[in-house]
Image (cartoon, one colour):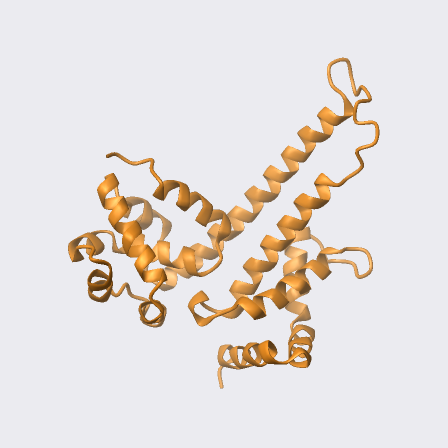
Length: 240
């Protein structure tokens, strides 16, 4: 029995039984600690770093929200852990001491001004770091489908009408479980089935096949940073 099939069985059992969930989390602690260490850029310290608890909660959340449509379980869990740690880091920075924020730090700025500047810098760093990790992970997954980032850039719609057609096909695919399963299993865009289900012309899907593959992978595997950027693009930004 393959390792992936075994973990899927364990995840299914963990959904139904708390003891099974506890056993799965316990057996996966090296993975959870490893993902926490990637975020902290050092090994987490028990009893000192709350991040390890946040990561455990995120892993449990991944058990409850996982489906085969999201791809392999561990990459999905890793993405969810990273996002929860980012959220926690941002909240912690917002709740740091605010005592004497109006105290002058220099001639022109208060302590509050310097803290705000530092907070913005740290949040920007965390967001940038998380986005880089997402891009690296997405690139690896895209290679399994015969697509790379340069292909997507070259294959993106240049006209608003075409962009809207691709968005329509994407929304249709995300609501069609069988179509998504076919896509993930075959690692090919089911152009005929997608064209028939969405009403988008086959030649449009063929022309932008690699772009559509990337969109489907992004929207089914928890890439929140990249998905936010894609959402902005889909709302406009191309020629009419």
